[in-house]
Image (tube, rainbow, N blue to C red; front, top):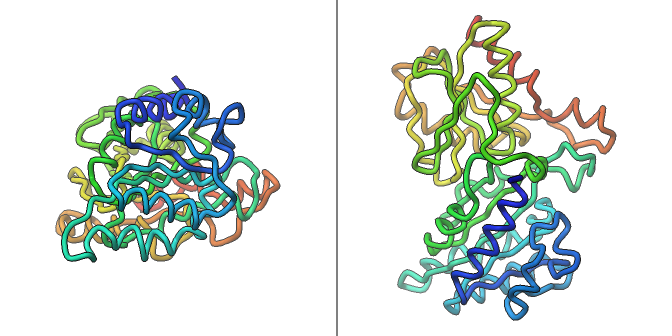
Length: 321
């Protein structure tokens, strides 16, 4: 099963199980089924609860927050996650605060889905990874889709939190197969964290969200074959609040597609420094894309976005000195 198929099946299942759940977004009705076909079949199966909306991300998110405030559940599809910037006020000043600002805890069961990331030639305003701009908002939990986590379990977890959640979905994952990892590595999932590993004594640990996981695994393979550097990769389903136990290693890296500065990786580094500073050979190393807009031309886009070669080069330099 491909990731997009797993995501679509998860939406069908969660809509079927939770009769008070609504899905809202632009062009989500059949036969179109959303820009990436993730909502295909949902309006046919649940015609009263799948709502096609005008082009206003702030309005869509505000309506979803209103449904959640009234006791229902809502999932929003932002056609391109870049446009979540237009919904930022609703998330920051309405949805996230509504959990606690009325004098008692108010369940806010809503999820905002954001297709993110480059690699498809969509250009500067349709290819960004904006996760860092949502880090640290009280009452807002952040998740990222991965090929190792079943999306139904992720949706059930998000809705059970009873607080607003944002699910980042890297667009390049939609066509990839679920649970696929290249030899010689194995993958295990426990407690919402996928671990891709060779053995229990790695030279370094890499923490990365699902969208760049396949690039990290490719770099891990080349590092092993060319430089005899063994790595373990941790892929958390929930990005924030971050609570992942990083196994013992002298070197820790965080890889993300965003540009540097105030990122999720910096949050992870802070977490690791607090818990494990005494066993590290040096600071946690962050690996990002270049500080640039994302070009449309594929050869220029490749120069900007973090890739396997960037990851390999940084890790080899740090570990081998």
